Image (cartoon, rainbow, N blue to C red; front, side, top):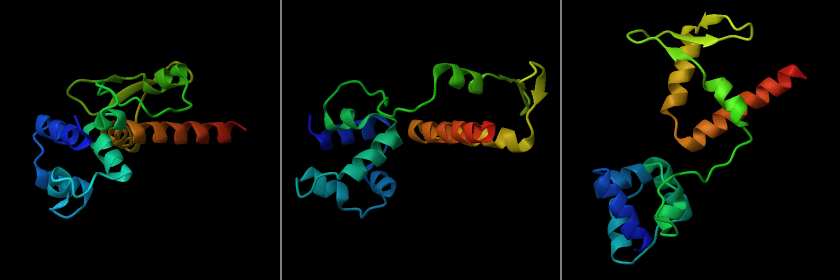
Amino acid sequence: MTIVQNILKIAKENKINNQKLCEILNSNPNKIYDWKVGKSKPSTDELCILADYFNVSADYLLGRTNEQTNNCYSNNISDNSFNNFMQGNIIKGDTSISVPSSTNKSTQLSKEETEILNIYRSLNIRDKSTFLNFILDIGKEKSI
């Protein structure tokens, strides 16, 4: 399959029409038609936007792999740091979250901390990686 066919296939699977694709790409309505007739091809930036939007790898859109998983972003977060960061227990029916503190006592997250966690959860994989690396870098600077 071609790049355009792959994009149209995943868009169809996600019930995204050509108009919505153009909105995602912030482009004119003729963009997808131009791709279909071979007048133009998706740019690298457009491929990255669509890969992030559909949470697939650019290689998948390019037809280089059949694996949709978006694991092309690397980060410097160790598994242990990530697991420690992500540990916590959401209380059902409540917006409060309990997390272990450095003293192993459970503490309630503030409203600001809860909002940060909610924002994190809404991010795509690339932005989550950037966010976590940023936080870890601040932690390293603070401990110096």
